[in-house]
Amino acid sequence: MPSAKIYYDADAQLEVLNGKQIVFLGFGNQGTAQAQNLRDSGIPNDKILVANREDSYAEDARSKGFIVEHDFEKAAAIADIVFLLIPDQVQPGVFNAKFAPKLKSNVTIVVASGYNVFFKLLNFAPTQDVIMVAPRMIGSSVRSLYQKGKGYPCFVSVEQDGTTSGLTTALALAKAIGATKAGAIASSAREETIMDLFAEQALWPNIIMLFREAFNVLQEAGCTDEALCYEMWMSKEPAEIFERAAEDGFIGQLKHHSTVSQFGQLSGSLALDGSAARTHFKEILYNQVINGKFAKHLTSIEADLEKEGLQNPLNELYRRAEETELVQAEKRVRQRLANLL
Ligand code: NAI
Image (cartoon, rainbow, N blue to C red; front, side, top):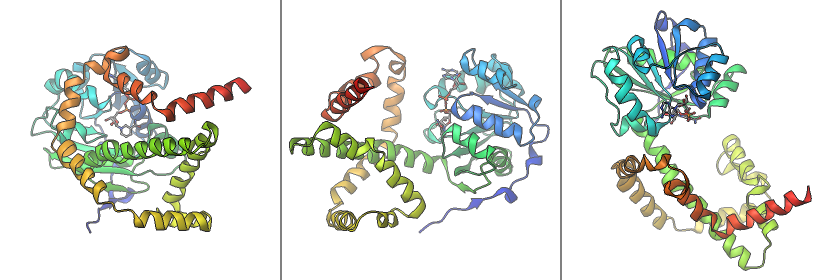
């Protein structure tokens, strides 16, 4: 089986960033964490520029002492390194129109997600570097783990090596944001994207469906709303199980359960024939994710996702999900709990 190279602090040299003008396009979940980590790693404040429209994120950047520029074309023109940290769905529109035309020919563009690179939705010149430094953590953890002197999992890759020093820059930036402390894993925009979209479009939809159907069957068997909600998720038992899985092993964590539970889980899972699931998973992976069908569809409805109410397709999906008995029962339970207070 293939194994990935892992880069540590000793593989990276911060000095290669000396004198470089670094621009953060976006100061949200990741932007705020990565910019602060970078500054705390010794990058001078006047070498960091936050390119942001005038909104609460821009205010936040200023309150943290960063220099903010609203004119994206101005910011693009001076950048040696650009961190692309606005939401994936708005990146092509903003980057291609305002940033790409003004960027230097040898600029380094850094993405934290492979999506727009893998689906070729961003315009890069062949002389530019395109690298991925993708923390596998929410922004607040990227910041808090750095402050505690700890690392966090992160993917690194060079997607386009226009200057031939893409990897050196990628590792220096990964170190500066604290990502090589625990080891940054060599990956690719393709690998990151297909794993992410597969989890979102195949694995978790099935888990949500299994919970929904389990709920219906147990409710039919006479179980109460309260018992079901607490048994299935409100007790936070599933969260604990996944935490244990990360620490003790996916199957090894079962040893923390009772013998009855261990026997039931192991014999039950081994007896299940996964071939239908495997066929379904392959269909999603190849005919929805890798072939770009989902990405194309998302691009086609992008404008609708900004709309209010049920004209927004995401709101319509929420409306349909809320009609399920699981969500209705949970609402009843939360309402009764609120009435008790
Ligand atoms: P976010 O949703 O927190 O981004 C907010 C920022 O984007 C703000 O600075 C806001 O002013 C700007 N922005 C939003 N819409 C804009 C528009 N139409 N025009 C100009 N600026 C706009 O973004 P987040 O979650 O930090 O994601 C950034 C990148 O990091 C994405 O590629 C994402 O996939 C990746 N990533 C995010 C993680 C997370 O913790 N949310 C985890 C790992 C990677």
